[in-house]
Image 1 (cartoon, each protein chain N blue to C red):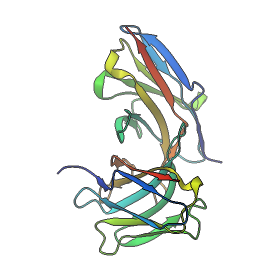
Image 2 (image 1 turned 90 degrees about the vertical axis):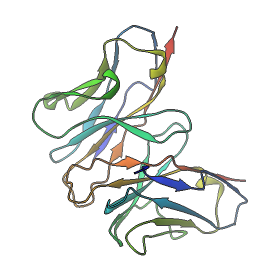
Image 3 (image 1 turned 60 degrees about the horizontal axis):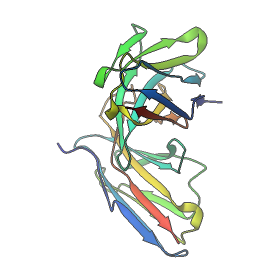
Image 4 (image 1 turned 30 degrees about the vertical axis):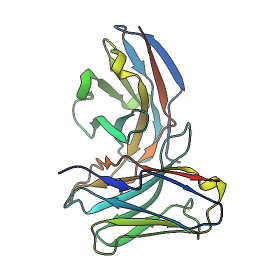
Length: 115
Length: 114
């Protein structure tokens, strides 16, 4: 098991373009989370999946953001019509089946720069 | 409102000196508490966690933390800091909610002087 992986690690895009990030959780982890981290801040919760069901979305997740986890394994986070304020590190985390203690395992993140 | 406060944005200690990073939380239910460390360009690594039981918990890399319910605190300590401990440290709180999302503090950057 190689842990949570995220691709790409870095993405530079121009304002107005669409971007998509991928997260592969640890095998058999049924919980998957997306967080956003801006410079000098702690991660902020964006959304949560249990298997393929998206069960919670933060108010931070505007209409331009959409996340999917179609088969309950990997997940994608898409940002449409990117804005400079979207520049941040996007972190994915997964958590084992059946746990109620919320221990989450984080990936290395995707750093997005919007020019 | 649920929140985590890390009062110290930046701390500098000499190598070999002891370390304490402060964390205060506000959470309406039984809190689950975590400390994560993040090195530059890296993801978050779990140092230790508290769910219940003994209020002094041991973690990796020689770190420990003490849960004090009366003070709503979960401070991280290490008796002797190594240069490799220089990183950013985040305290987080979660709970027995259906989603298990974590609420993070803004982090404390640790610098270690030789």
